[in-house]
Image 1 (cartoon, rainbow, N blue to C red):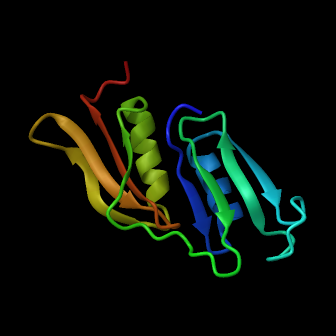
Image 2 (image 1 turned 120 degrees about the horizontal axis):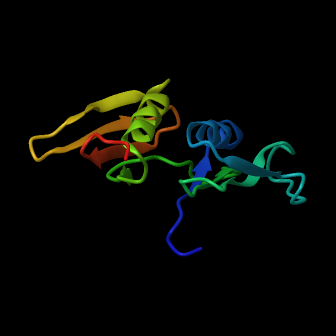
Length: 136
């Protein structure tokens, strides 16, 4: 691993969230349950450790147990600026907004770039954008 990777402690939604992100970003997902790790501090089928595999976004997540705080996103955005072709970024924006909330529509800016912001159904705040509008 070469860069910091977010590790989310979710309120019992890690399986759904990682499966959702795997579908959005067209990658795999690996899930390990509390039972797999011989943990008894939560439901046996809760996610003790999960992550996205072989995709454009690196992300870890687990279900919070006991008095562990659940993820809350304030004052930070997950940036996907120029990380894929414009058509792909438009698709990601659309899919991440399903069940979420568009903060700022994906739109051309006066400086020539296109960007927008969305908070997805799991509370992650994404900044998505690109220069130009060509897929080449």
